[in-house]
Image (tube, rainbow, N blue to C red; front, side, top):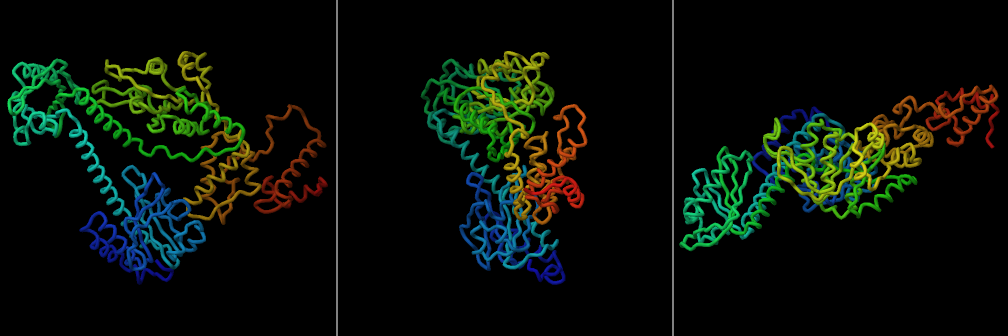
Length: 638
């Protein structure tokens, strides 16, 4: 990767390099694989150092799984991400390449000088859902030219490292799940016994072996009738017959009357029994929960909740990655003050504001500052789904409730139980569902789609809208009783055009973010840039500002941006014609207006006429034309 590399020498045959690395790592997994990978990659690419890391999300740090530096391994290498060249790597899907001067570009990274770093290359390692697992990085003590062969090799083995990280994550999750299920099954005083379709015992937990005085050999293989007396066996068999009429894949029946169980030594003990059935590998199995019925129900509910949370996390893991709310304007500070007032309470909150103002950030701020922050905040955009699916998403459904409902599924209310439910665009909620939502708010209960069973939940509701709900009520599109239940504590989120200098603060924050992601030097706004930003009306609010700043970084040259190229053309109109009185101006008045307008532009640019930060650029006229008008209007600096 040094400056004197040439395809004719180092990379004359990329296949040879690939073959060497593949042969050196193909028979290994885990720590051994990563150690061989970084060493072989460093030696093959003649690099000063190569390391592969895992991402520690909670602490925002990277921990090296293997680090080869200057012909030796570095053990226990872990560091904070902010201020390092690895930071933009984790935000990108492409290789981040710093050919030279990496220390000067990242002066806040304390390790770069000690590592004798001159150049750097990194690529994020991601899971199947494109979330960051870690990264593969390479640094050199000499400049690093951009060579397609090296980049291709680096990408191939970054993909191999990501696959190994994913495998290790799955393996770890499998071990944790097995341990969790083991604790659930064996960490209870209830006997749990599994039966096959022939009603033969296939396995039992520790409590069952203890209660029945048996070991694996004595209890497994026994018939169902051997562990109950004749009367109790008859009740159990009647329950099995009843279960044949049920369609729910996880159906269960509770026998509330006393059941007599028979231990291996012939002793009889009273018990209460719950029976469930399920399918595994196209075979039917039955589970008996014996003795402590309340504990057994708790175990089943905990398992069910784990399954529901796992399902939801597969859909929405890491969904919320919000930056801090930035702003110092009176209106935004007022909104934040309202958040501080209402967050510790249980009151329902209605966030009102235009699209793109960041209502979801305020919802998350309310949740994090509430007493429910240890529980999840579950979100649903009422406008993002067809109306016929919103009810199922909110309240869940049972198997067979509608076409395509192949299995039962919990809704957002159950998933948010104990936490916060955020309903965005509440004005889009179908009128037919508003009564059902009102009932949940009033009584804390509902029925899933297709079910007659009532479920109770304890959910704090935060809603948001960009509509005038009072007008929707007059049009018959929104229930007035629901409106009063939602409007307990309204918070107005101001549009960006009313936030004054917050526009500059936000723009600078976005520029810094995207400059780091692109691994380019920091970009600053000059006076002309700031005036252009403040002159625009921002119909798309913060979201539009963020997109425009990203485009500015992409089109920047030499650390300078051109807002004229990315802002909509309407921004070039410096006079808001709608604010002027409908009258005809005299030639003298027009000349005075032009004179004052030019003076304002000159004052903003410190009386500099030409250049990107001059008054001519701000007025969108050639510098020669502006000089001529200054002379004609006899404008002089006071």
